[in-house]
Image (cartoon, rainbow, N blue to C red; front, side, top):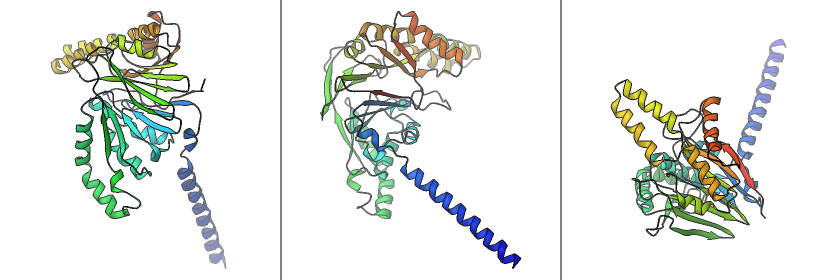
Length: 339
């Protein structure tokens, strides 16, 4: 009888564990927040605020924008898809990705964005917007992931994993030669997205984006030197998400590499300063545009302590910008109610 009692106790314990595991599984499946699609707000989620420099707390460039039931990404850098998923966003409803340019730290997770949103339930091709070159990227990724698509369709069936949805639909827009050239690249259900030229030479093309929704606007600089084009297109916006490179910190890194005889590393570190914007310059852009809230992102190098964080923010204040300044971090959320 004692053994029977022990057996029954173990069975009860096992049953209890199974119930706990069932609850955990249910909660994991229910964590997707589809309410963001019905919210009236213009919403932004930072999914990657770092740079090509490896950082345990930051993925590379990626931002989610949700408005009017539409869900997009601006860029999809390495490691960013994990953050999109961890943000509990409705990944199966992802409609498209807007690319600012084609550096690897802005496109490295495009394949994951396409594949994982398809697995999550997307039933149509994923729109891919950007300057000329987008179609080439879409075609290349189709070849890279062809074997993956074949295997998943064969395993699950076309009804659940439609082959026609396992691809990108590229939308290329060539801007005029003017430094501040722009074009509306998306206009549906009250959400308008404008692409504008930025100065990331020798990288060309390079663009930024402005999202307008019900009297609210957010602007993404993309990678750029200090640019009058960003100033012009950020006028009247509520939020400006601007890249920022601290030249003093990068300069010290380049000098250290030189002292150690790492000439190649010193050369590369010295070069990157020439086609990015300093925190002070980002503040000047926000000041001149009259933007009430500046968010620094694509941080080079990513701040790892309070002193580095203060260096970025203090430089913005030196510009004379008096609006709100936020140092972006992966997972941050912003919501703007309609006006």
